[in-house]
Length: 408
Image 1: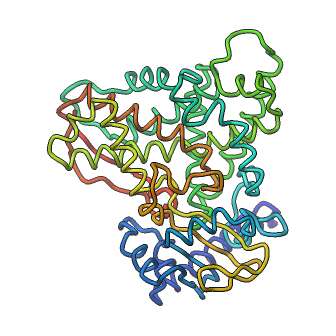
Image 2: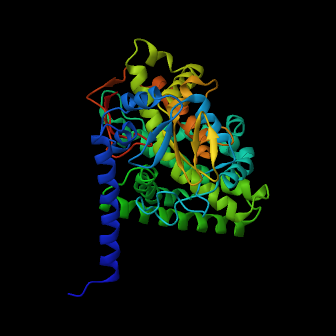
Image 3: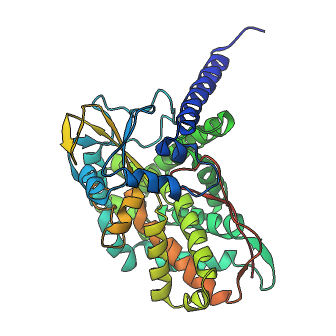
């Protein structure tokens, strides 16, 4: 049988994924703590993050060609300095040759991300959501009630509650028709590995499937915006797409915002819910106290500070930069470890105007997690762990959970 172009492309993709994985594995075997983070088994990365931090403002991963910082002052400087871009000077990802992503994966330069966040803020920012924008809190409570199990039953907190709840909330906020949400939720779940694929190669099957899912979600978003534009001002605007269009945000920008939400909220929110529940169950009396909204919000904020929604953030120097005693050359690749924010004030220390690529999604991540934790604590006061929680391998960005058995 003759070889097809598709076969050649698949083999090339597999070769690139294997090459990148082998490089990370080899560097880790040589004691490189950044490589050990990227190898991303199921162990917690804190020991390797601490090794990076112990190097001072900078750790240079020579084998992977990356400057890494877990230092609070240096991390803040990198994220706020306009000389560091989200993409390289040619407009591409610095590791695109070794870590291929879907062509539809939202790669934006930092100025564009800041502009999108400013445009979305009146509808999707912390203050707007807290004040009732898109009925986000009410929708979250209603969705959570649908997924709550009967008392006395065992269930998987990740698969049975946190993940479908978070995906359903995003789809509701975006205005996806209810009859289409079940299929769309499946797409969002398949997209999740692309977030980790920015740093760590996934298996060939997962990489291909997640890339296809991102393409399909991008198509869904385009259709959603087009349908909302055709509908015009008729009806109520209780969804983000309709509100943004009504506010005069350009349709193409609305598509970008919607895609950032679709990819950046579901899995981080599910991880935040699961992580917060586990932390509370491990402290006597803490779970019962979380039925009060302030206690639930404080617990979620603490989890997001100590286990950030996006643990790694990439930047590229657009010119030679002298920073924290070192010279980062033009085109130098820099990675910020989000754990640097633990020593900074505020609930979202690295999520300002120049924060993570998916920072636009963080307000909805926080709202979803806080609502879920508070509602679960009120409805399931006797919740307990029913086995060890397992994290997904090759997940250095999200440290996403694979399963978490609990009993109501």
